[in-house]
Each structure stands twice: as structure tokens, then as C-alpha cells.
Length: 139
Image 1 (tube, one colour):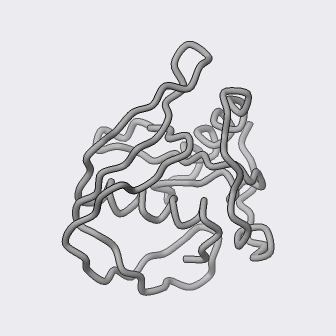
Image 2: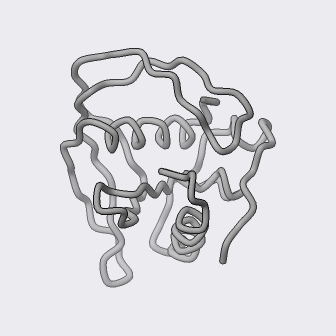
């Protein structure tokens, strides 16, 4: 179901809880909401009112990728970026990394399976933005 984007800083500033396979419906809503907004590149679950560590982004082919419990395990080459956010009115300057390694869980046949991924460029920046949301960091 397409959800309204949350702008309430009280909700957005709370660190999210660990997600489980039982949260699959939240991931589905997240993807539907992401695909419904032409300006969206990524969304975290707290942006649709769910305080779970779930994030979704569009890959280079425009396909949604869902990450349960994403964490950055390695990062290289910091730079300053000015980022917009669907939940905030103004853009903000943040430190990002050109290259990251992320550990996360993927939902496979109704179960969470641990995965790792190396990322760079726009996808890496989007994932860093979503992890900030999961941590309750306002971007």
C-alpha cells in the first residue's frame, strides 16, 4: 500500500528497531511508496511511519532493492554532499563516502538471509542516507 511520507521529526529522530521476516509487509509498502514517487531514489521505513531497520532504493536499472538491517562495515574516500530528503523541506550538507561495504539481510522465501555488498557512486550515497534514517539521524 502506498503510504504518506512522514515529516514529523519526533518519529524520524528515533533509532529504528531490528527488522525481522515478519516485517515483510512493511518492505512491500516501502517499495510501493518508493515507486509511486517520481522524485524518490530511496526510502527508509521510518519515512512511512514504521520504526524498523528496512530501506529500499532504486538501482541503476530503476529496480527496487530492499535491505533489512543495513549496516556500513567499511567506508572509503569521504566527501561532502548536499542532499535533499522527501521528509525534510531543506537540503543539508553531509559527509558521505564514495565507496562502502554494507552488510544487510535479504528476504528470501520468507526468511532473512545475511548478505554483503560493495557499493559506490549514487547507490552508495543513497544507502548511507537511508542508514542515517534507520539510526534516527535527521538528514
